[in-house]
Image (cartoon, rainbow, N blue to C red):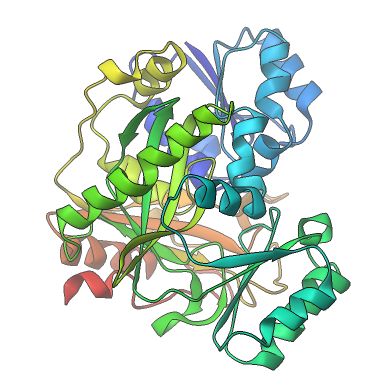
Length: 420
């Protein structure tokens, strides 16, 4: 088969890496790809928002399947567009991708179908939102309604911080139109858990759960990022808690989307909080998570292409999906300054010294002299695999220590919770 993956980050590198293992793959392309993806797929210099160019390339190359990685093109309707051009696509259509594209929509959906989530109110103007803050106690959770590259959720620990966040989102428009509405919700306490699931309508096939680390610094300090590291499985979380989250949140949400005339086909990602009152929904994403994908797919024993095709052909319920008993830990190497402004074009060295670990490129490019350089905030994800979390973690950090670029930053406590 001839397959095109759309995207250019660590998630897409992991998807391409997994697809490349399929004996059914003939040619594998990635648009636009990055400096690391080029090792497993032919990179095509087409941006993810150039729907017409993507469709033209797919037709010219007789592409059998297009796989959509990132959230922005999904929310903008790339699946509908490409299907309209007669192409076969894996990913949710626009009316289902709204589950990530609008937090207001999602909160209203959860409320309507009585699916556990934090109490909330939504606002489309600064003044009433600011007045609502006076009714609450810190900490405050403020979410821009639309997509904001993983940075649209702010946890404010004082009224002043919360007011500043509201002004930035709704008045200064730091996230553009994504900040036309905000959700203010109660602060939930507990451990976070991510459950990704292959979904086709009401058919839900959960993947092995993962746990992400959003804050930029050790001890969950500092601003939220797109994710500084993750691990899977979660040996410290009882299986019955995981099963409860699937039964009370993931499956009912898929059923609710069908009931709303928005059947979801693709990867549904549930971001959950394990509270004293049971699992509650923090958010949903409409695609593979980044960096969760970098620990989940290396543990997948079943052919990923077969899963995609079964979903598209309405046979997902007949698939036997197997997972490795191995543990996986991914450590993100980030640019200095991330998640705020950061330099680009820094030379990356030491990749040739990495042994016994997977390296997924998130923000890399090939420089003019052929040298691999940084091109994003999150630069590389290093994934170690082992018999348990401790072994996987040791391998990930040993490999990460070999990789160098100026100002490299990484958290040193990824997966520590699972060692207690």
